Image (cartoon, rainbow, N blue to C red; front, top):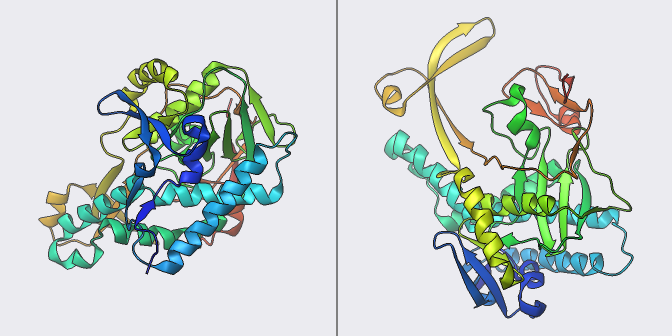
Length: 367
């Protein structure tokens, strides 16, 4: 039986540097729906639900162990003269992955996708239906199986030398991908952890942010693992990802920053998606050589025919209005594909993925 009833899906060790005077008691909350700052809200009530992970004591212990390691890593990072260590790179990558899977927003998306499938398939798909707790526990299993998926990403820390603070949110571990969002070869395609051009963002404090990135596509100048920015536009770009990715609330250390944050949200709100998922249905079309072709139809059309049917749930991603200048394109850079629906993946994924077709390299940046 779990010992803690009030379980946080964004841990207090992450929120603590953003609390008032770092006292871990109160925090400034900017609610997107109301576009209103809630000053000095109790931090114990933020990003938590009763038995969010269920009542498994072993799972609770494992989560607590990772959170303690993350908290210790952030404390080490904040010590004067710190250089980014390899074991901390591993921890930050894995914590980012874990955090991206376990929030209320991530679990809600999984529940909605299973509901889409059940609505299409009817009673026969009842076994696929998830509730929030089942979705959370499924995500924990995914984490255990997927830890290696992010190990090839390079990691560096961004030191904020501006007067604008980094913010965090109720869904702070952001996956984005400038290459996929801008290159015509990937136009209209979703992306994931293994995709070429992956960018993983996690604010650690109002002055420090962690970024993991595909080093074959991007380049970041750094010294002993530290990059610096003195450009407010870079901070605005990183913060916009929190505004685009969050479920309902963002958190800020300094309440005097609220008017600026409200103005940022005015810009970002048009880029937020009403839904972060898409459900596609395709039916058998024809056979060409060794391949079977399917054509996309509406769920209603699929239900009206007796052809073999496949369903596909797709994660949708927001496209920001600006990108941090310190994340530069590597020219020509490298992406890898085998011409199938796998699309474009990172070098280490292409080297290890089992496929009936070989991968080849393409320039990430074409003239």
